[in-house]
Image 1 (tube, rainbow, N blue to C red):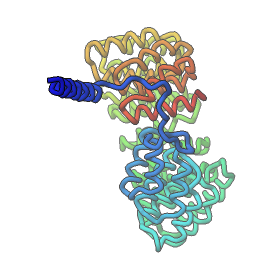
Image 2: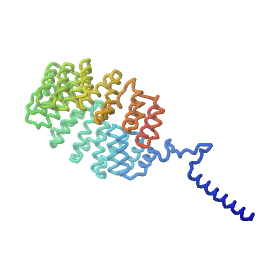
Image 3: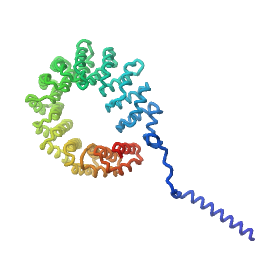
Image 4: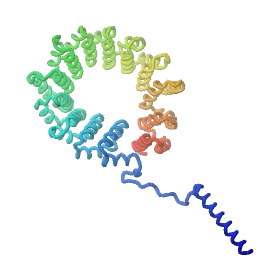
Amino acid sequence: MKKNFFVIILLIGAVLYAQNESEAAATPAALPATAPAAPAVTNAGQSDNSTEKVRYNTIKYGTETEIVNLIQTLKTEDADYLDNEIIALVENTRNQKVLAGAFSFFGEREKNGLENRAMRAIQERDEEKNETVLAAIDYLGKVKAQNAAPVLRKLIDSGEKRFMNAALRSFGRISGPAGGRADDAAEYLVDFYEHKSPDDESRREIITALGAAGSAGAVPFLAGIASNTEERASLRITALESIAKIGDSGGLNAVLACVSAGDPNIRSAAVTALGPFSGQAVDDAILEAFRDSYYRTRSAAAQASRQRKFAAAVPYLKFRAERDEVPTVKEDSIRALGAIADGESIKILEDLFTERKNSDRVRITAGEMIMQIEPDKFLDRFVMELDEAKQKKQTALYNGLLKIIGETKSANMEAITRRLMQNSGVIERSYALDMAVNNRLTGLADEMKVITTDKNESLAAKARRTLEKLGL
C-alpha cells in the first residue's frame, strides 16, 4: 500500500513539474540583472541592420538596379553621406546606368568629385555608351568644371552631332565670368556659329551658351539676331534671353524694339528681358505690358517687376493677383509683390493669404511670400490657417502650407516644430526635422531621438542625420 502511495505522489509531482515548465514557456522571462548585449556596431557607428549600413553595402555589392534605385532614394532625401562611396564606385565602373545615375545625382547638387571620371568618359567615348557620355558632359557643365574646357572644345571641334548640343551647352556654363574665360569663349562660339554651318538646334545652343558665358563682347552679335525680323522666332527669343543674362546696356535698344513685335512670344520674351535694365523707357514698357492680351506678356511684366523690385508696378500687380483669369499670372504677380516687399505690397499679400475664398494656389503663394518677408510677425496667423486647413480636410492647401513652414526660419519656431514632431503623420514629422535644422533647434533633441526609432526607416534615418547635423 505504501509503495502505491509513493508512486501516486511521484506521478503528481511529474504532472505539476510539466505544468510549471509549460507556463514558464508562455510567460515573458523576468528582466536580467544586466542589460542584453547591444547589436553589433560597424566602424561607421551604425548597427549591422541599420538603413545606413544596408545602403553602404548596396553601393559596394549591389546590382546595377539596386544601386540606381538607391541613388534615386538618396536624391529624393537630399542625402550626401554616401558621396565618397559613390565616387569610389564611379571611378571603377563602366556600367551606363550607374554612371548616368551618379552624374545626375552629383550634378543636380553641383557636387564636385566626378570630374576626372566624366572627362575620361568623353575622351574614351568610343568605349562608353552614348547615354554615359551625355550624362558626363551635362555633369561637367552643372559643376562648372573649368578644367574641362579643352576637353569639351575638342569634342565640339570633332563635329560629332550626337554630342554637339550637349557639349555646347556645358561649354557655355563652364566659361562663365567667374572663370575669366568668358571673352575667349564668346569669340570661339561666335566664330563657330558664323563659319562652321551648325544646324538650327546647334545655333540655338550657341546663343544660349553665349548668355551663360556672360561676355559683353557677344552682345552686338546677339542684338543683331534679336532685331532681325527675318530670323526664326526661336532664335530671336533665345538671343533676348541671353542679352538679359549678360545685362549689358548695349543690348537694351534691341530688347525695346522687340517689346512691340507682332509675334506675342517674342513680345513676352522681350518684356522678360527688360528686368536687368533701368530707365524711363524700360519702366513705361513694363507697365504697358500689364495690359497685353497675351497672358505670357502679362506674366513677363510681373517677372520684370520682381527682378527690378519695381514699386511703381504695385497697383498693377495687385489687380493681376486678384483678378487675372490665368493662375500663372496671379502667381507671378504675387511673387513680384513679395520681392518688392514695401508696406503696401505686404498688406496686399496678407489680404490674399487670409481671404479663404481665394484659390489654394493664391493662398499658398501669398503665404510663402509673407513667411519669407516677416516670419516672426505672421507665424501665429500662419499656424492658425494651417490648423484650419487640416480641420476642414483641405489636403492640397494643408500640404502646401506645411511645406512652407518646413522651410521657414524664425526665432519662434520651437513650439510648432515640437508639435509637428509629436504628430502621427510621416509628412509632418519629416518637415519638423527640416525645421529643426533650419532653425538650429537643439532643444528638441529628445523628440528627434524618438523619431530615430520610428518604424518608417526613411524617416528614422532622416532623424539620425538631423541629429548629426545639429551636433547632437
